[in-house]
Image (cartoon, rainbow, N blue to C red):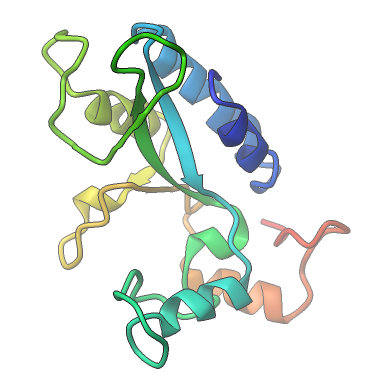
Length: 169
């Protein structure tokens, strides 16, 4: 994994997905030129942080950024990431462009960097928010372990968590 910020965020994911996320991003990045890397912009998000995001654009200033209240997001259980693609436009090591462009194919291999990432995760059983029917959440990837957010929330509320606070699946 080329990005230290992303690695730090991945370390906070649920133990069942943590290494898989790191390894999958490494795999994707191996197929990309060195001036392109993946940024995990969001991983684990507490229920309180989720509620604060939900309030944005509703009861607090700002644009709406989520339709999920606290407990209703796989982020709340460390089972989801949001990502973007970073580009070092002038090869100076600064990675000055953070992009959510799902069609950009900067390495000109016939497939957008975005879809290379999505496809790598889908091959490992992850769900893409870009495939949702109602709201398209292109940066979002989640691994559900065949559990709904309602089931995860119930486990959380019942105290079915490990010593680090992760829901026991």
